[in-house]
Length: 128
Ligand SMILES: [Zn+2]
Ligand SMILES: [Zn+2]
Image (cartoon, rainbow, N blue to C red; front, side, top):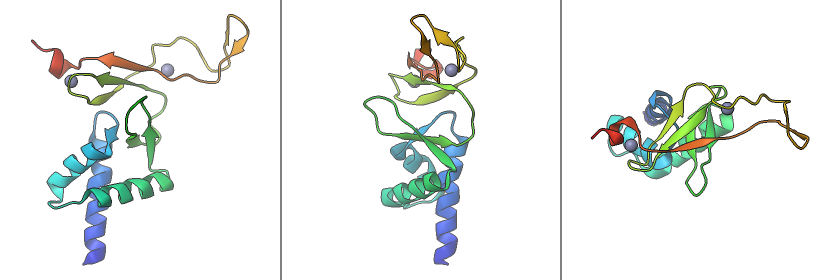
């Protein structure tokens, strides 16, 4: 019985992360997974997030000045859009940066990678 509940908690937590349209904070995971599992505790969410991360199933996304967010591993190269109104973070499709890994920038800088986050308001929030 206890094992079954643990599996259900984990499935709800992983399901919330997989079903989201962007990386989720622990508080957001808690809210979403708590709809499926009434009484789900925040400590349980933290514990499952840690073990999913240790297993490599999810990856942390760090935005400056924010708690880490989590997304499923293996989504490939992509960027995020942070809505400063509703404070949600969304995945963006494609990469607008035309600089490939291995490219050399003026000044002789060889590029290994880049990170980029857009800020603004999402479709829900900029609807007048
Ligand atoms: Zn928004
Ligand atoms: Zn990119």
